[in-house]
Image (cartoon, rainbow over the protein chains, first blue to last red):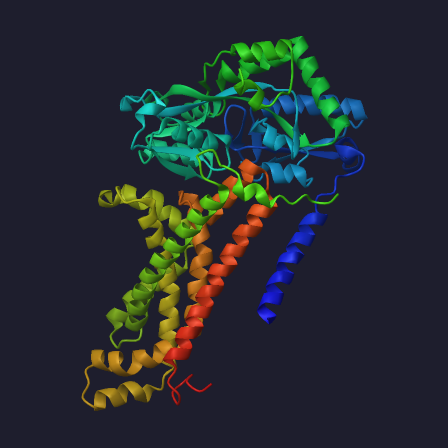
Length: 304
Length: 236
């Protein structure tokens, strides 16, 4: 009886703490950053070219630079010229909890906007469309996911690609061995070393990792598109003032052509650290989004 | 703002025709398999090395020392990465091994260093006279260990071995880093997909507690059965 009692009490204690933990800051994010004088930007370490690290605590990328400009606009809006940006590293697993609990104010990485996540967080206007495809070694001769019967496929834990692979496997009846890496760099290492035959992930992450590898020519992105996903910046739910501030500044960037220039800088020109050029021209969907911005989730695109 | 519990998340389909509950059960199976196999490796190797450290003869003792220091001084996660990424690259024969085997080796060797120390402590806690008496009766060193020293030493160290067995179950959670589909990887992936982190993590925590606790009770039963009244640790 004693041990059962202690066990149940411990579980209730955990539940009680969890229930009390999700209080939203009154006044929203704008008040919070004005009072504290700093905004915490969550970013990634190997999601090139959207957000990645150059080492030494410096982060850069298409979304990182875009967020810096958004924060500039917010600085003027709330009249806090001394607002500092604090960069903090997040992972696929902890990005949503950290935004929810207030540690991170705005997450600028490669987060897909989908219905399940909209229950926990809010997204800005879609600023990138990614397609989930696969990267293989150029000399493997693989060109389609359907050729992967009996082979091993690696993807990163905590991403939407894991679910897409699972649905695809079930739908087509192909049996491949799934390997889950703890992050994108790890997954690419498995492909490089030959332990995995294919790496399934968003095409920009594949391109970024290939471009930064030792021999980019050894790899190629092939295969059908498993999913088309809108990528956007992420922040707390139920905070209409902050969302308006972010969306307004994004809309201004889209209208003035600034976003297109930013895209060309990161996707069609040499980027740090190796000066490699991803050579990915803007797709048709993103062009139409810039003309008519929206923040619709992934499921809306799948219906088409 | 009250949290809305949604325990039905476990009955949801995860996209491949099985429910999250079935996936969790399969992940639990993986955790238990990794732990059980690693425990066997650790017990066998640990007892061997621990015994070697007490045998007269500097060569044996030094090799035992080297083994224990090597596997005790490197963090577990680093050891797992070494076994998974580095060893297959250095030893081509191991390249084809599945990740499961490599993780069992990593976890087993790490725990064997700790078990070696516990067994050594058990052996050295026995009075010196036991070994001398055994040899005076005409038993060889090996026979003395087999019939006199080890039976008593193992009974003495059952409590630390219980801790070690429970630790192996908890340490198996680092296997997620090398893609073993065990409970921790299930928890992280399912939490991302369903956004129901609290329910998922509560369930996984309960499974870990249940597994470790069952091991605890099993070892307590073994201890009670093996007890020899009148010897060290025997009276209760």
